[in-house]
Length: 241
Length: 230
Image (cartoon, rainbow over all chains, first blue to last red; front, top):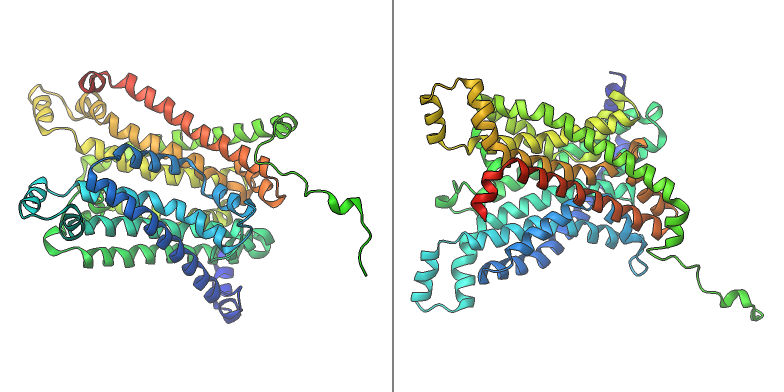
């Protein structure tokens, strides 16, 4: 109980919100900026590859391999290895690069799956109408794959925002700073700060998840909204509520 | 004023390679101790999680009304970043190995529940009908038909849980029990590339080896799938 009171007190101190560069607002802005850059970089790399592989219908094994291998790499390790690479150094770039690595698998897998799930009859019809490969990709396959792309984007965004908290253990920055600093000071001194930081970080992750769930729904054309295979478990959870 | 030519200025920066036999030779005890802590934390977390998660999945399978809340809760918990989870647990439980273990169990739980439930839901209705017709009761059906047929789903859950637990254990450095994460973090803060790279590679190898072990167990336990796929 004591920690909860301390956490409330900590959150009620306006200085903890407005302090330049160590206050919640500045840390949040930094957190979102790093995350956005990482997701953007991930999209630039993963979507063209995923869409192309899906279009030509090859490389499924490669997509699975990328997902499995990145799952096994500790997030913390990449966040701490990139700063030690000479030409990167302890910079924001090191954080963005490490985060982007973890954004790629969901983006890649969903882009690939989205294109593979396009009804072969639709492809046939498009080819019959005389569309070239590029036209088919751009005007038929891509629009049909949008629900999948949105699902992948949401997964990647949530994962990157969550992972970005660990940057505080390496190059530094982001909302995770509040927690790491609290742990550094010791629980007896800063237990409330640790708890408050945990609350803020959890809220941020859940809000990002919520916002992109809505975005995913909005960009999905009505007839495709109940497509059950986008994300089986998550959708089952939503349907069951 | 120009500096006198000093031989010191001609030296290169000290070598800081990403891999060094010297490091392995001097530190294999520390590496093995970290590996042991890492592997034991992972194994305990996955075993405890499985013991809790599989009955939960069965419960959600039997009582459809429970499956919504269970999956929704697991979705929410899974979205919470690990750092935040440790921030909630540490003030409650204190600083120590138990805090890491509970955090790891919570994350592993979710993956096993979801995949086990998916496995159970995939059992064909015809098979269940046949079992009912043969007079199987609820528990006999569960133990002899549903769980064996759901095994691929359960194993997928166990594999995912194991691999991500190995990766997640490193965050335990926050409370001083991060297994190989301790070395990774130490290597980072002392700018020691060999230490950080060796510990990272060891962690990835541990994940891959455990994954291979579980895959092999899965193949041995589901001989009917092997025959069907070949």
